[in-house]
Length: 240
Image: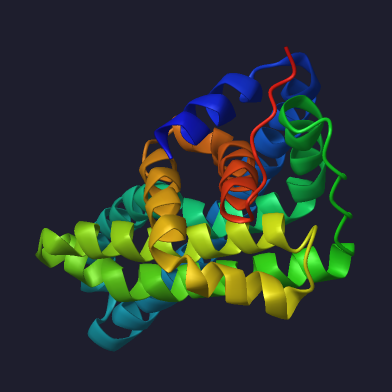
């Protein structure tokens, strides 16, 4: 597994994958900014409405306290959005990965398994469907873990372990479905659940590091191509 991870990291910065890396980074940042702006506008609207309601209820003398409270809430919400954008990276990664999965897998297979039959690109709708399902599950896990992260340290551990499961599952199945029908790919993942989960832990470790987590789609897909090849009985052939 460590050898697979090293090969994945080394290939991320090679010329063929650099273009995909920049595109995935730009798309990830665009999604994060879009979500951040939407949440900020919503919070500002709610705070403004609450402040106006407070003033109308208590009278003009409540104007200064209401403004002070609104400012504090806006500041806290801004910090929350920044922290939340880091914790929502698993969901962003799932969506971004579904766009570029086949391009990444093609490069890994060409570089490390040139003698093997190449995988068949997934229909975009299928890759997007898998990515959306994983992203929604990641958001649910985030919403459940957020209070525990704030009030209890073990929430971060729960978040990491759950992220390892959902991202490990998604990227392995995306790699496997290039060669197998979806039911067979899922069955192979279930038969090798421990190995896939260990790979997911490596992905979760990367996605938990700010800035570094922008490489997650490339690292995760490249890693799981190697894991699939190993589990499916394909011997590694390096292009030397």
